[in-house]
Amino acid sequence: GQNIDQPTEMTATEGAIVQINCTYQTSGFNGLFWYQQHAGEAPTFLSYNVLDGLEEKGRFSSFLSRSKGYSYLLLKELQMKDSASYLCAPSDDDYKLSFGAGTTVTVRA
Amino acid sequence: NAGVTQTPKFRILKIGQSMTLQCTQDMNHNYMYWYRQDPGMGLKLIYYSVGAGITDKGEVPNGYNVSRSTTEDFPLRLELAAPSQTSVYFCASSYSGTDTQYFGPGTRLTVL
Image (cartoon, rainbow over all chains, first blue to last red):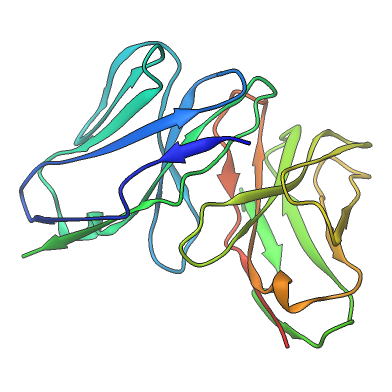
């Protein structure tokens, strides 16, 4: 099976920066997705990396190192609405996603 | 576009009952997926389909069945409900295997 490791919880202050790390081992690799999931809601797409390097989208950035099996999601200028679970999901050689358990980010005023 | 819709939103079943969770997408996506999410756990893939008439097992298929007779619909069938199937079920769709998956709002199922 696949192995995805990310921290369970992180807490940060409004306006701060938080980095969520994810390490993975998959059968083949076809890119890595990050999803955001608010409590009681469905996951929604944040970012996708298939090549090494940093992808920036507004306040959110995602980094990938394929050789190290490592990715991170960077959340800048944190807002209260960013309190949610963040799911790391690498895609295997059959293009199926495996999801980590998620990192719950709590933003405090 | 409504996106991905799921019915029902909530359901309580007794052990041994059967039910079908409905999923429909109006984005003309080829790929459709069923996941379950247990508290504190990642989403687990139950079944998926790469097009009408084609289905395949995911990581946790036991106790479930699917069919894909049209591009739009991908129902999930539970034949003999067990307490271990208490979970939140999400349906998702994507245009291809490398594209973003869009999720429905989920069905919260309790088996007592």
